[in-house]
Length: 212
Image 1 (cartoon, rainbow, N blue to C red):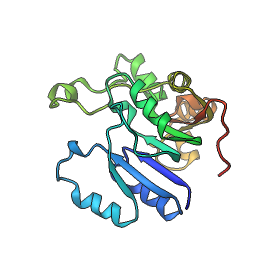
Image 2 (cartoon, one colour):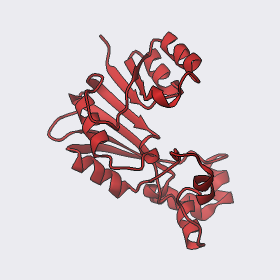
Image 3 (tube, rainbow, N blue to C red):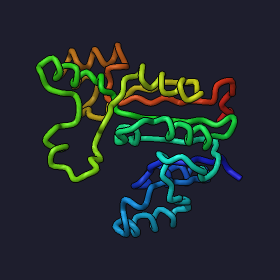
């Protein structure tokens, strides 16, 4: 068979469908209890594209769906308010011995957030949104620094193969951004750890990620 990929918390399915079209055998996991029947049509459409959907809560200790060549976790960890130890234990179990784990999170040290903090504005979730939220609050409980991501990988028996830094919230080309926001653009160019989001590609310590 083809290479196997599991997208944990993939929800909308755009990335899993894309990877399926590229030849991966793709599984998407979601904790379906949170949605009831609201998104049955969406999940049926995702299945129709050849993506397997598994009802799985990765924050509870227990059997994992399977082992995969690549496990991806994107825009998930920041929404969880408790210890990530169980989650990372599950991710480790889902990785093939030579498999990879890709984790993407928002960067709390994003340059505009640093500047807002200097002006006395919090870089954390807006308190009014939390106040008006039903329980549980499903917004961002914790955003990360790259040092924290490195620690999370190490504590979980993983080593980082590669780090990625990128900014989604940009408009126009590089020269326009440089003209409009010279300091912010220059800082993010020279110091990638000030960009909006970060990701790490991990492998189990002592293993080599299979050449893809």
